Length: 453
Image 1 (cartoon, rainbow, N blue to C red):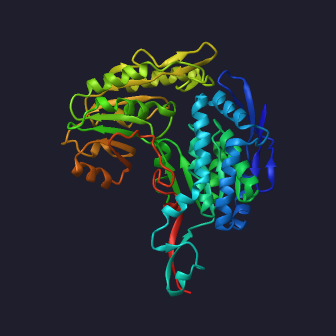
Image 2 (cartoon, rainbow, N blue to C red):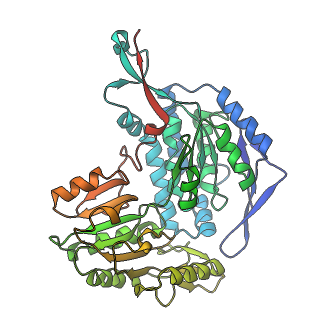
Image 3 (cartoon, rainbow, N blue to C red):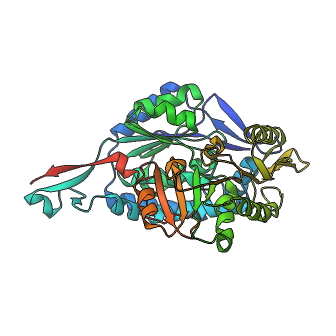
């Protein structure tokens, strides 16, 4: 078994309290050390005392760490062994894990784009800039220590906190106990690349200690469901990262048949486990043909073990899969099932089950199911009209708007609760390096000061 130690300011730490992580068949795969409260407190204090590396050193170290993360042996695991372990434990298809590995590496190597693009055009990066002699806005940190309560649904979520390191924050990561392998590997690579033991730490904890990490840090980012968003909504120090509820809107003057590939990719790419996967499809006109076409395509996806090279759907132990199946049936009551109505848990016979896609048709653009996001390809197709307007499209991470209506596009771009708008035939999981995911993290962590030297 692997031993995943706490990675603290004094180096790796193997605590007395450890948790066994099992694969999908129930076999032990790793032991995860859990940091006690006093250790967490001391670790955050050590980060606060540590000086920030110069910006050029930070950028170079991030690029070096990204390359090592994707290609080298780290903490005793080759890249291939790491990827197989993540797939075998989480049920994320092996090809998705590989793609996520490459995405993290590219994000680290191109981190300078995020840093440069997020800085206001009129601001300089240092008071030493000659422009500050006559007065200039300087882009500077609002604090020193940034904490992350990471998610375990997809390895690529760990791109999200790299910006904080690039900006000079010292970072404390609390990994998901479902998937601690990616952050353990990434933090190790970052420390070896130059950030050292006091630049970035990994603090696995139980729920009782988790709050200590956020309490002692200057700022934090927390992943979770609607309950997590509600819990931290009033805390200006915490940036909640909740469900994506990504959607697609198809208006009447456009043809949907040529974009079926885009619809299916939006719903199912990356095994459908990401916040950028579309869960709602709103159609101006009859939604039934669209739902039927999506269901036909998704029904053809194979049920395979997660480590199979051709796997494209998520896998989990049989009992949790059956609970998800029951939960979906309850929430889909009253909707027309085009796919998944007879069950989504496909037993593989080895103690695990594939979560197969589901497609349901709703009667209203205001149906509560449109806000439901699950960890597998699941789409809710609903009618939409101009009277409904933007309201059903709110609270959306990515909205693909297949429309030629410029006035409607104006409304969608202006809507504060829609984070990203893709106009035309673009899948919702598309992301570009240097572009914001849910705004730039720097918008939360940085400020401008007027400096005159």
